Each structure stands twice: as C-alpha cells, then as structure tokens.
Image (cartoon, rainbow, N blue to C red; front, side, top):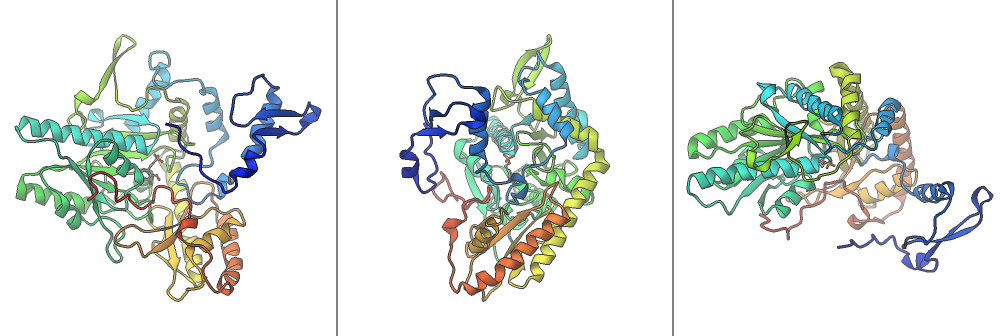
Length: 479
Ligand SMILES: Cc1ncc(COP(=O)(O)O)c(C=O)c1O
C-alpha cells in the first residue's frame, strides 16, 4: 500500500509544475524531468546530483536537530570505513565472514559491558535499530511464555505485555503487529514513568514480560529496574508467576555503563532476560544499527532462530530483515575499538555536562520549569511555568525554529495529558558553545513571545515528537 505523502500545505503549487524545471547548471542544457515518474532518458550524473542535492537543502540541519536521539556526527575514519563497506550485505555471512566476525565481537563486548554472569552464554545480534530489536525481544518473551503455557496444558491465546505509558512507540507497534495486549502503567502526578508497584498490579498469569526503559523517551529519566525486579521476585513467590524483564536501553544502555556504574539495571539482575540498545544513538554510530542480547539460550527459544549454513558450519540468525547494510556494524566495531571504556565515558560525560548546564541556564531564564535536568540521560524536558497564558511550548518551538534549532514540543500521555513540554537531547558534537548560542536565541525570543498576548500555536503545530507520541487508544487490546 503506498502511503500518502504528508501534506506540506500547497500541493497545488507543485501541481502547476509536475515536471522539475532544472536550471542550466554548469552551462549544461536546461532540462525538464518528471517529478513523480521515471524519466524516459538518462541524464548526466552531475546534473542528477545537483537536482537531488539542491532539493535536500530544505531538510533541517542535522547538527541543530535537538529532537533526535540518533547520531548526527561521526569521525571521518568511521565514515570512510562505512564507505568502504557500502556494498556489504550483513546477511551474506558466508561471503563476508569478517564482517560477521566483527558483529559477533560487538555482541561479546556488549555482554561484558552489561555484566552477563557468563558472557559465553549470551546470544545476540545486530538489528536495524532498537525498534527491530524490540520486535525480536518481544517475540522471544511471547514465545517463551507460550511454550511454557502449552507445556502446562494451559491456554496460551491471550498474552499481555506490561510497560509504562512512556514507552517509545516501537512497543505499541510490537503489541499491535504481534497481537499482544499492551498494558500501560499511566503517569501519576510527578511520576513520569513506570512504578514497580503499579506495574506488578497489571501483571497476571498471561503477562509475557515487563519492559523497563533506560531512559524514557519523554524526559530522559531512568526507570527503576532493580526495584521492579524485586517487586517481580515478590510476585513470583506470592503467585508462582515468573515474569521476566526486558530492558529497553535504546539510549541508556550506552550511557549508564560508563557514567552510572552503581545503577544496577542489567544482567546483574537475574530477572533481566534481554536488553536492547541503539548503536546509532549513544553507541555513536550513524543511523542504521541496533543490538539485542539475551542472557542465555533459555531466554531466546530456539524455535524462533533460523539456522543457515555458514562456512560449512551452522549460523543461527534471528532478524526481521534479510538484506541489511553491514557498514554500520563495521562502524560500531571501529567506535568500540577507537574509544574504549574511557573514551565512551568522556564523550557521554561531556554530553551530560552540557545537558545539565544547559538545563540550569534555561531554568534561570524565568518562564520555564524543568521536568528533568539531564542528570540521567543527557536529555531534559521543560515546561512553561504557571501564569504564562500568552504563549505555549509550541510557540517557543516555532520561535527557535526560526533560527534553525529543532526542539520538539509535545504533550505527555495519560494521566498527564495536561502537561506540555519541550525536550532537548544533547548528543556527541553538541558543545557548550552551541548550547550558549541556543540560550541566547531563546532569551532573545522571550520578550516577543510574552508580548504576543495570546497563544499562536497549539498541539497540532508540534509536528515531531520522536517516538514520544501519545499512545493510540484504538490499538487492539489497549488497556
Ligand atoms: C526508549 C526507546 N526505545 C526505542 C526507540 C526506537 O529506537 P530506534 O530509532 O533505534 O528504532 C527509541 C528511539 O528514540 C527510544 O528512545
């Protein structure tokens, strides 16, 4: 099904010119080429390049994109390696055995980083990102539960998954695509993520697992994984329901090990069955790589794994895609080698320093109240203080956009749909200097926003929330 194009307001302007009218660049012939159909003939590669290049100038500046969690800067050497591997297909393990070997080494490195009691028992794979990793981890939880229920001769047709309503949209997708009832713990007062007690109250014998997020897409806060594990241990003793935890460490899986070694959230907790992270977020690789790891083969039922012949041996694969680029996996290995434990610590500490200082400076401006302060993920959300009736966070977002800054504004989900916030993600490459320029622009915009007298923009102007969308109440089995 072709998906409809987003409506950018003036389709009729384009309809007047169904062809692209191409300037005589570099004194080549003027051209007309169809916009929505394959051109009949070939054209000079430089002309084609120029057309595409020019059109893409309308995209935002990725480095000023404070909405995304995904890397927007990488070292030239990583980019060079990616170029050298552009043609390598990750699935062709037989043809590119060394790329496959680097993938395995990355899994081993992550198993150790996440304190697997026996790293050799860990099974894992690269993915296109945390979303694919979430699908695989969710499927493993569901299959494990189903196999156990069938072995006990009990019904296995009504699985549910418990999680905070702040989970990234990929978990709503998982529940929708794979027929699992999502049970969301709502926000309450100043609690903007899951609480162990509320999560346990939603569990029953059909709960395939509980997802804990490190940290939340909405505000960068860590969910209390260790406390959740303790609460589920109690539940197990009380009821016999032995419910595993999956940790969605899309961002935090590559922050907490370096900055918060005392926070216990990983395979040190026996109840944590699996963990995912995005290599392309705080793993510091350009878009296109994630990781999913399971504590051991019991956590990943073998009936989900496909076995392919590989150099005369057996290569297990677990993936939604078949073909997939190998370049990002190579870049991940490069970055692991290049930075090591100390390099990652320094990069992430700098992000945290920039985030906490920027949060403080924004709070000092007056009209804003911090929801989080960047001390967990280098991410923070802030809202307008009471009494700022003349403007909205959506107005603030638009004012910043005039200077090129992309700062998303959105509302929180149930039961805090009344709370509207702005969110800033500090990534590698966002310096103290850029942060100061952002504060200066915000300070300059404020008097005008205060003078405007009434809000100009509401929620419909937000546009981009980066996975922090409100959950769809019509999704199947919505709880
Ligand atoms: C907590 C969390 N989980 C999952 C995802 C989805 O990750 P990806 O974009 O790598 O598919 C995100 C993205 O922001 C996230 O923040």
